[in-house]
Image (cartoon, rainbow, N blue to C red; front, side, top):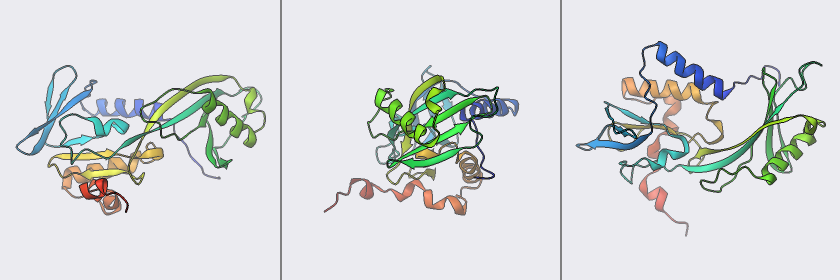
Length: 240
């Protein structure tokens, strides 16, 4: 598609950390082990190194692990499940012009596949979608399926060097849409459940959370994604 754009999530994450630090933000590189709740309100976290960090408001944005933070009341834990995705990175030749110059997305044999050429000569092929819990094993079948489908779209791709194979876990909500904004626990907000579109929704997620943290109200475009759309009855109700 003309005008199609892309971004490298790894470079973006590094750039965001650098930008935050240059702006005076203190980054604590430690796991959050437990939410601190005082007087019925979220007031901070305890990290893996034993430090307690207090806060007026806490944003839980732990991806597929968002539903596993200790200390969060059971009826407030985000209904997020891990969805496995395997991805490949190949190396494109750089001396005969671009092997592929634009992102390609398609459905092959009923499976979604994408090919993303990077400026550094890397070609990303992804991604499987597997409901296998917390498994992050890279499998021969996953690699084969991605290469087979990519070859259907771009013959000759299997001749490229295979630089990396990886499996990650996407955060999926019950409707696979994000969970943004305040929860039923005062002081606790969510930014998770983005499923396959996490990096694509980074800017709008940041804007929405900035608005609600400063004004107390979600912007209009984010209101359909409030965590409160999944009440306890919705999560426990069984079909007749």
